Image 1 (cartoon, rainbow, N blue to C red):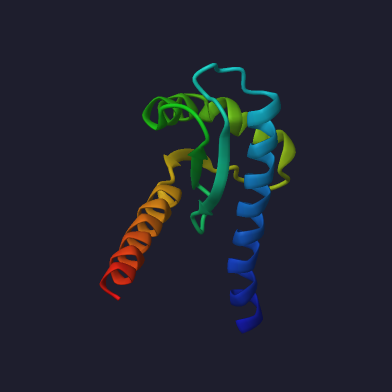
Image 2: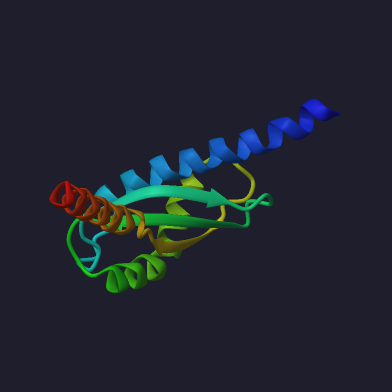
Length: 123
């Protein structure tokens, strides 16, 4: 029985990865909403029962709030297309969230650069 428990999280990760790949393609080819610009899917987290999936995205250009609203409005459309592509019993309900990781990384880089500059000035 322990082998079965260890394979369940692995399957969940595989399903999340497949959803990420399929959503990337669907957003590029099928979604025609002008509010959704250049979106990059950063990651997908699927609940253990596959009922819900958090989809984290980032933007190259555009308003994160407006894009998040547009993506959440199109979630049913995207889910129906995922249903045709995925071969699983339950296709999760999609919940899109803007991923601020790149913003936080830029802020941290700025702080590090500031600290290095002040240290160089002190020396």
